[in-house]
Amino acid sequence: MLVLDTDDLPVADRFEALRTAVSREGGVDAVEENEPAADMWKRLEVWHFGPITLFDTRGTSVRFVRSFRKTRRELVDNVSLMTQAEGFGTGAFGCDGYQRRLAADGIGLTPHMAASHEYGWSGTGRSVAFSVNIAHLALPVDMVRAAVPLLQHSPVESLLLQHIRGLHRHADRLSGGPEAEALAAATVQLTRALIVSVAGDDHTRREVAQETLLTRVLAYLRAHLTDPDLTPRRIARAHGISVRTLYRLCEDGGLSLEKWIIRRRLEGARNDLAATGQAHRTIEAIARSWGFTNPAHFSRRFHQTYGTTPSHWRRHSRNGVPLSPEHEP
Image: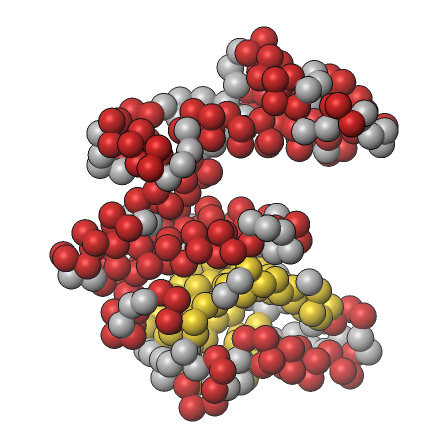
């Protein structure tokens, strides 16, 4: 949901509109702009996934500052995680004296009960972040604070990063759908695993690792869905478990590993076949980009799942002609 686009406002009103929006939505109490009002530009979008609030902030160089004593009461128990979007340079993140340059491969963590927090970028930047009440993480405040300078050492950081990007990429559709609560639960689970992996004691790490294992496996699958060599052996090895344990884990979670992978790959290929931006690519190229190395196998599975061939789906989707009811998935 679009909250602010300063291009829609008179120059004299832009800074105050930005300050009001980030204060209301994120509890930011100070904004430092490096550009004159006529040159500044900001766009802020917000989505809600159950207890998770997802933010997309982009525009000219800026520094956002938040302090505990000025944080609004309803936000004081929140925890935020921020990322720097790919292709938008490097951000600068700070929390309680700890400083980190935040590139596209990292995550910044800040508990709102921290004494101070700041985040910004130079040039044109873009941040995708989310916040959640610490009660949903079921972790001590001291553990969350201890994790702040250690996240880059966590094997879970890249999984959560890919998860956030997937959530953001489809936020308009997913935030209002039936999957929103389940996606929020997965986000919370991955955040717990991230924090505990670097700041928990041995007992807590083992406990949370077991609790979040299926969530981490699914996040790993989504991050590597297009890899043709995404085999059960590789998945199991990445999580330090046997293939037998992997299958039992998926079975206990009510899913079939191979069917889950194939269905998500088919969904990705189906979306690409319908996308005008992919019109220059052959059906075989799209299938291969989603991990299908055998064109005949792809066509057969596509037809079994959607009741139509890839070429028929692409032709009708491009022309804006709906498929007949028996061909709807």
